[in-house]
Length: 247
Image (cartoon, rainbow, N blue to C red; front, side, top):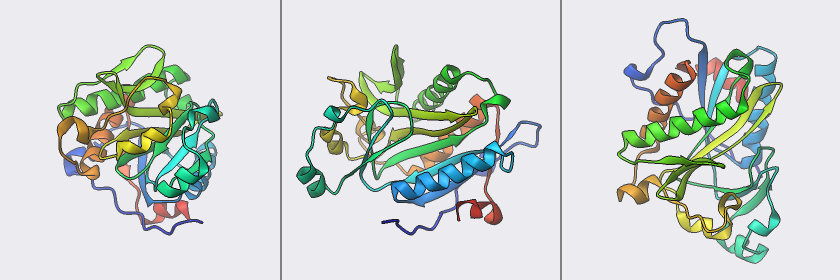
């Protein structure tokens, strides 16, 4: 069942707004709290319009109820909970068209779906993934959290525990899906899975590292700033007419 949602405006301070230069534009749209399937339908429409040149590059932000998603490389044995336990915890399971294995999404995460035409950047998916990781590493450092990447394991880690997961899809060089950063996430939900299929690896969150909760809007604004720098984009918030692309 789809959930109705109002799309809250992205809060971007004047210092974070797009400079008046010739950098390619990136449009920001906050989808708010959405059912997973509904958000995918919106994302698919935006991807189609980006392929046709009807939209610039986009950054989609979305909040989810508790859900476990299986990527194209996902293995059912990495789902540790049975149907009864999942119902008790109020968690659904849904296949996803992205790369990667199994992961959890839920309240307190920063979930970002960049819809970028890599033909206008670099036709290099590996470089795209590494650049997304770099955005997260630099953003986390702004909050006093040193993090790192690990060879052969996409994502961002703090002392061996995963804090940011990345799983993407590309079609005709246009990206979809993206990343999930644990900000104020209830980490007990990760007990239901083998996160990203990596046995023996734990998870953490910004709140767990700092010992306090954070405003998602503050984290979002910081991510936007680093994304714009790393990808050489100017950023602007969708106006009312452009926001109707989700309807």
